[in-house]
Image (cartoon, rainbow, N blue to C red):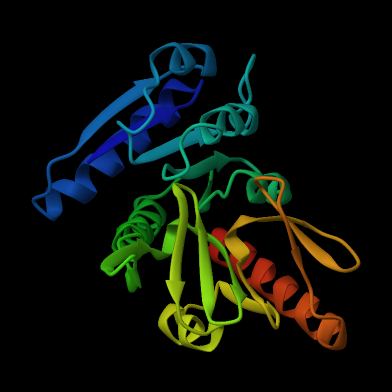
Length: 240
């Protein structure tokens, strides 16, 4: 496990470092913690894929924690981002970078412990997958990689972050396999992973990769409400 801390306050960096170190020592888990005093320093040394968790102070001179997170998220979709801040007024900004939580200063150990336990759960969930038959081979597809699914007759296309997977089955079968609350049957021919929705228009969802996924007209209000409820639940989890 590799974790980074970026905070311009020496006292806050030190406290967070010791709390994180204590958490993993109590569980006999090895951890590497690297500390940066500003966003510029972190930006020079950050290597995509090497870090699992980033604790970023929102209010820093120069590059803010929000801007730093946006830059890191451009290339690293798996990084868990936790903001440290004196206020949670930036909650909406946190959605744009899929932040997993906030720590309000002054930070206490039980708050750090709570957010790290949540991170451990996230890592376990990130390995969940479904199996589908594609080109006569059984293929494992990570749930976290699925952007959306669409069906043509009995052919389903699973659009993932690494490419498309074709399988011969119904959308109902795929929906049962997925079985996660972040997957929304938004149209008779589409299932969308709400985690990747960037915006919502009158008749479609706009995904973070620019693709539009249609919304079923007959249930438009209900579907939009389900997405709003999902976003609200993410906001509540981030505050915990």
